[in-house]
Image (cartoon, rainbow, N blue to C red):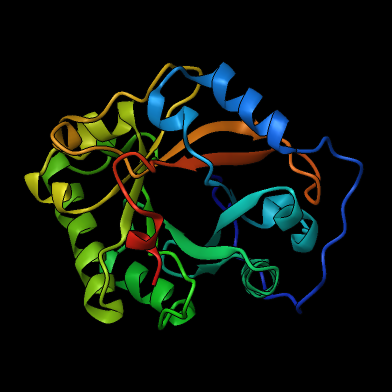
Length: 250
C-alpha cells in the first residue's frame, strides 16, 4: 500500500483504460502462487484480490474482473484530511464489474485518531451489499521515535472502535510482521482479523498477538501484473482453509 504525500482533489467518475500488461490467467495465477509459497492454504486459494490507490491511475475494472480478480481494496483516506483522488471512481467501477470491494485508511501516527476515523467515515459512512469489511493500514516507519508504544496502540484502538461503532463491523488490520511485532502487542488487537504483508516466503510469520489464530488475507507481492492496470499492483490471497470469504463481506 502507498501513502499520499499531499492533499488531492476528488475526481469525476472516469472509466479506466489499460496498456498491454501481462495477463493473470488461471494458469499464471496457479504458477504465481506455487512459486511464491508452499503453504497449503495459499496453494488451494482461488480467491485472489488487489489493493489500489491513485498510484494505479485509471483502471479498467471490467478487464480486471475478467482476469480472475475477485476482490479489491481501494484507498479511501489518509490522516485527518486526505481523500484519495481515485476513491470514488475505483469503488463505483469495481462494484459495477462485480468485484467485492472494500475501503482502507492509511493511519498517520501523529494525527488525532478520532479525527482520522471521522475522515474515513465521511467516505465510508455505511456498508453496501458486497462490501468487504474496512481496513486500517498500519505500517508507518519511525513511529517509536515520535510517540510511545503505549500511546500509539491506544490511539490505534480508538480509531478501530470509532469505526466499528459507526459501521457495526470490526475493521481488519493490515500490517507487516516486523512492524506488527513491535507496535501491535496489545492483546486487544487479537479481536481483529489480520491482513499480513510478507513477500518471498513459504508462509507468513504471524505477530505474537495472532499466533493462536491465523491470517485472513496475505499480500504476497507488490509487483503483480493484471491486465486493466498500468504498472505494478499489490496482490493478495484469502485464507480459504481457515475462513469463509462470506465472513468478511457485508
